[in-house]
Structure formats: structure tokens, C-alpha cells
Image 1 (cartoon, rainbow, N blue to C red):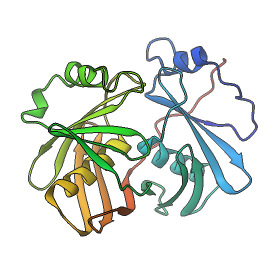
Image 2 (image 1 turned 45 degrees about the vertical axis):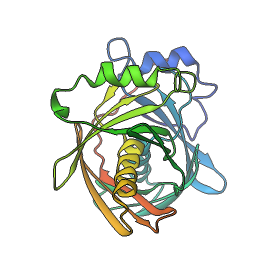
Image 3 (image 1 turned 180 degrees about the vertical axis):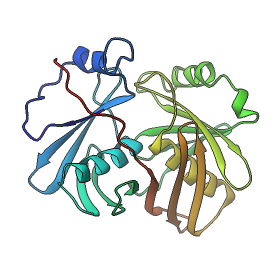
Image 4 (image 1 turned 120 degrees about the horizontal axis):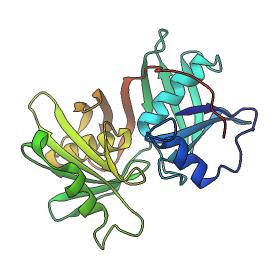
Length: 246
């Protein structure tokens, strides 16, 4: 859900109000809520709330969506620089307004937890390979990892990967939503970087990824030390608009 909050009318957002809006039975329904706000130094500011009503860390697909929203509102044309919780972001959008390439933060630190990789791409992520992923109970397995003693206090997003040859298939359990989501932008970014790190790839790399919600692509440069020029690329489509009393 996206709200044009340049008027500042939606302020001091109540935890329960945001949670209710995100509820699929009693509210509008969504994996999160974003406010587009004025900022003196950027085209706009993105403020993101998780579905549980708490302020969230960076949401990659949300970032792409809010760029499309800004174009829909006439704030930007085909390029933008905006501010999110993890810092400034550059993005470009096609003239048709349906394909967005969002620059993510540079990443240097990747650690391991047994067979998994752990890194922060604007949000913290746990990345592990799996087999027969279509049939996996991602909710139960993701919930168990997210709530184990290592990650329970701060939470972590859990990504399961299956290599399909010409693309990676990814399913994600997201903290804050506390459920599997159909796509996680910072998650597929974490997956692409982790697999390049594991394979000791270098240079300019493009990784095609399929999620339950569709197809995304992540491209970046890697010199063996730092991932730079990281772009999360994919579509964004307006579904509906409306008004609701809070």
C-alpha cells in the first residue's frame, strides 16, 4: 500500500492503525505500508511500515513500487534520487512507467551460519539452498530459523533457493510480515550476491530470479571484496486506488 503523504496528514502513525490497514480481512490488505513524503534534499522520502505495524528496514520491491508511484503522481520523470531508511537510492524507470531498476546499497560483509549465508542488503537476510522447493513448507521452516536463539530478538528474513539452471527459484519468509511473501526485493538481492560469493564469480554479473510473484533480475559488479552498482530490476503495476477512513 502506498500513501501520498506530502500533505503530512498521515503522521505519528499508530501501530494498530497500520496493522489494521494491512489486515487482509478487516483492512485494505498488504505486506506493508509506505508513505511518500517531501524531503528538502531529495525527490521524495520513503517511509516503510511492516504489516505488523512497526517501522521496517529497507523494502526493495517496495522501493521499486514507490518509484512507479512517484512517476504516477508526476513527481519524477525517468530518473530519481530518493531517501529511504538505509540511505539514498537512485532509480530509473521506463517511459511507460512499468519497469524499474533500483540501486541498492553496496555490500561487503557476508558471513556464514553452517550451510547458510548471512548478509544485509538494506534488511538482514539468511540465505540457504534447498531442493524440491515448490513442495517445501516455507512457513514452518522459515519461522523456525527466524525465531531460533540466534535471530529471534532482532529477526531475520529467511530465503530458500533452488538453482534451476537458467535462473534461481526463491521463496522467502519475511520478518514483520511473519509469513511467506510472494516476493522480497532485498531478499532476491541477498540471494544473487550470496551465490556469486559462493561461486567466486567476479566482474559484472546478472542473475535472473523467479519468485512466486513473478520474475526479477539483479545485476551488480563484484571485485572479490565488495558488491557495487547493485540494481534490483523488475516490473511494478498499479492495482487500484481508493480512500479509507482511519
